[in-house]
Length: 380
Ligand code: BGC
Image 1 (tube, rainbow, N blue to C red):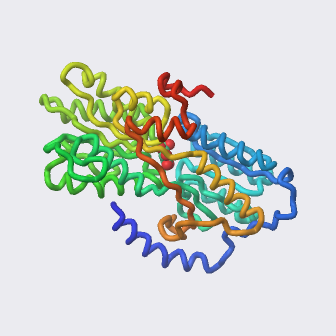
Image 2 (cartoon, rainbow, N blue to C red):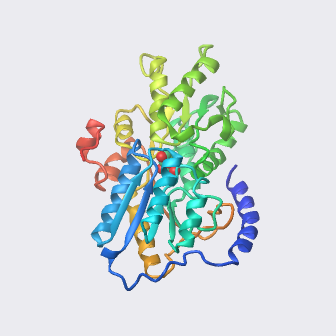
Image 3 (tube, rainbow, N blue to C red):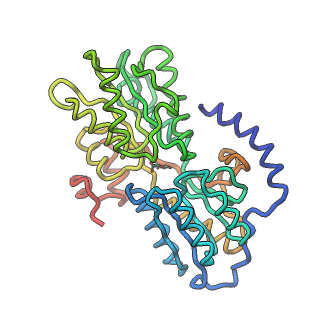
């Protein structure tokens, strides 16, 4: 399910979306440009507080909007779909002027979005695209397909098959790898998976990489709600079922730092990382502080840094544009088809972080302090 697949899907959906859009209406907020920011409320719905990044996202969006004088109703849904639906319903009935939503399940908020459209409340999909609704007005995120490519590449670099500059490395296969994906109800999962698989597939096809479990489809390798414990369990099962013959795992594709830590715990419990049994190369995403420490200590191989401060800025820009009855500035109007329409998007760049990059990318930019990295814990 790579770029090619996504493009084909996009083409088909574009036709559909043009039909769906001809009724008009997206982004049709009432003109709030005459109103004072202090009279306007932005509802911000975030999925969970179990992952640091969403706490950082919520705080950044809230404080940036408040600094401009707006009122903010920030809610976390504890990764529970009915809770998120209820919270968004409430934001609508309490008169939110714009909604910023990072969905738990990208398809579960349709009736809320209809209610928002009826009340002329613009909806900004935050990092995770809401699917199956024409009432999504804008999308702010990162280039999620490229994130997947970067994760696949980081696995190849960690294994020594590629150098960081993309040239061929000195390692030779066959090397054993296992693959993990995110939650299937999150629209981003297919992009991360597609990008990573497009990158790894040639190496799998020519036998350089071997997936001993033979589990390679999104359904086989998905991790519901991105949960660390679920990933740990699956890694334990993989070790028992496919590596009980003395063979070793050399690398694991992981789409998110929490999942990476679950994988690493399972491996350590099975004796990896002590004596001659080297820990495999494990990728990640989100630059969570616990994983940055593991990368610094040489335990986790890499992560993807997505600067939530910049994403919050884009959400704030988009919210303000809607309040002034303008269209927010998009830099991608082709990629993010939600099944009903192509949602205009602003996509931000990101960075791969290996041990050598921690200082320049994370400490010098003020994302984490050197003390936090050493402790593996956030101060604030
Ligand atoms: C985000 C990732 C995050 C994952 C789990 C995805 O939608 O794009 O940054 O790792 O959710 O929270």
